[in-house]
Length: 229
Image (cartoon, rainbow, N blue to C red; front, side):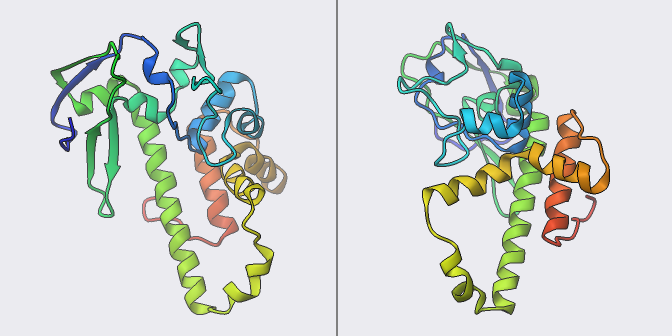
């Protein structure tokens, strides 16, 4: 089950809700996913992150028993709001530097009750899981990340002494690491700032909130808007 798949390849999967795949996993979440999950829980994005996100990275914090915090009585309590990783399972998605998209099989739990088949396609499966908005969000933030890296690289080339002059101000501590990605995830904090600066009402729609979040980061770091953006 290691072959590379294209969106057009035959594939189907029927989840039996056995819950075995909801244990001992690293479920990565981005700002868009966290925004939607936070609304489901009635929390701000910052509050949700502090309560449910691992301080070592943007992953859901599983319990000591290895169980997802949203697996309750054997069922997913946030199924309609579940992260992209969960929507794609048992597939993994890969996008190379040229934007070419492929998929691979994720090794299932040895006792999984899910059923594989070939009655559809990868693309159809993804659509059925409601993953398309999540894929678009992932691509938008990935593009932003690449532009941030390019801007940083250009700045370092133009000002090579900046590393030495600022190194003492950037302690490599667990707290600083946690703060940096928590701020990246906290859409609500960014929107609160915008509401004061621009007099805007913070949107509750996830796609609108994401667009404002990305634009705010672009403006704060003087990044140009990408073509067609």
